[in-house]
Amino acid sequence: MMDSLELKPALAEEAPVTLTASWLPIAVGQEIEAWYRGQLAHRGRVARILQSGNLFWISDLRTGDTRLVDSDEFSIRPLSG
Image (cartoon, rainbow, N blue to C red; front, side):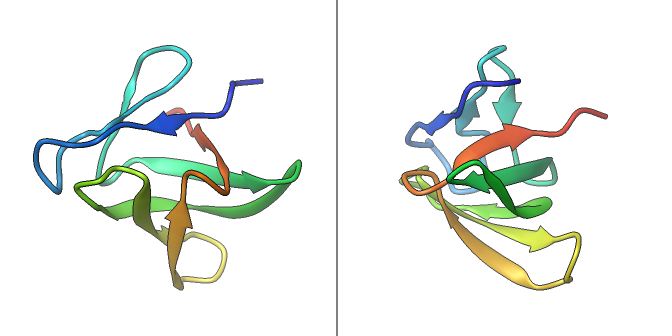
């Protein structure tokens, strides 16, 4: 089980801005899970990352909706492959 992540400020809006527990960047196009209080809240592909790094949008794979994810509220886990 991976540790939750803390997003770091980006140099550019679309740049990879997050380091995982295994030091891999999260970038636009990567699939992630957003967990809230131990339950899966969202699973999707990162669509956009704000320059501040703590807010990003995903395209939810279950519903097709666009979701705003706040890394201060959710534990973020990258999906492999």
